[in-house]
Structure formats: C-alpha cells, structure tokens
Image 1: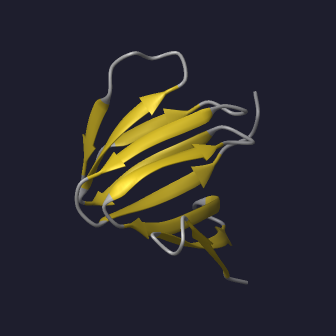
Image 2 (image 1 turned 90 degrees about the vertical axis):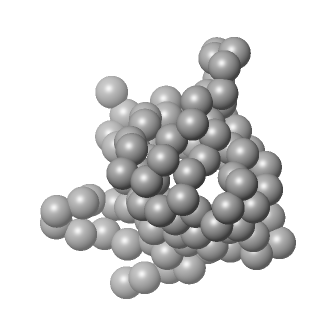
Length: 97
C-alpha cells in the first residue's frame, strides 16, 4: 500500500512503499529551500534528478550530490539539506547495525 507524506508546508512530498527489490523506501520531491530531517534508522539516499547540498551530523563541510549519486545517513541522527532547484530522491530505509 502507498502512503503519502508531506513536510515543510508541502515543500517536500514523498510516497512510501515496500518492494521485494528495494525493501522499505520512499520516493519524493523537494522544492527550493533548506530542510532538516531526523532519522530513526540508517538511510540510503539516491538523488534521482536535480541536486542537493548535504550536511550530516559531525561533518563541517557541505557536500553536493547530483542526479545518480548516492549517500548514506546514519540512524538516530539529523540530515541538513540545501536544495536550489526541484529535486527528486529515492530513500531506502536500512536495518540498524
């Protein structure tokens, strides 16, 4: 079953799903803006289109990720994003290690 989530007054929207090949995941779109998300479990983020600057907890430098690039977010942490254009993503929820 699909579940729609909306954040930051509708500036970020995602659809959550489960599949045999991907596992538990969400796909979504963010419009221009700055966002902070908390994570419960580790996540693997793939930028599908557009780009985003990312600052993970413990890092001091922002990293730019473009379409096709992947990064991991630790569980039980925060993720800071700067989005300069509408950007789509795939987020896979990984098992805690």
